Image (tube, rainbow, N blue to C red):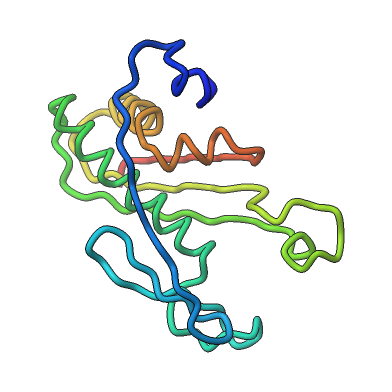
Length: 159
């Protein structure tokens, strides 16, 4: 499915919404951010010319993936009538630093993203895997990353 097909109406009448964020560069690598009604900061560590006032932009991408999968998991579990007692998720990304530095003709984006989640539930392992499949099919951040030219690995297990 290609975004232009959705936007053009080829896949039916779209129900479009917008999400907005803005950033204001302050100094060095410090960026003040606003998304919705929330203010936060992104920065880089000192070894990358920042002052470490907040997560890096790539850390925000991974944190957004974790948050989005957790929220989507809860909605999905409710629809599936699954009992979830706990949910922990982590995401790790691999990049080739040469791309960001511009020292080699390699991508600046993640080359691989790996998600690992532990689901505390009395449900079966099969239901946990079904929960993962449905969650990752409906999670906006996961589907965005899965459609990117990178390796996307996801492992969910019962806690």
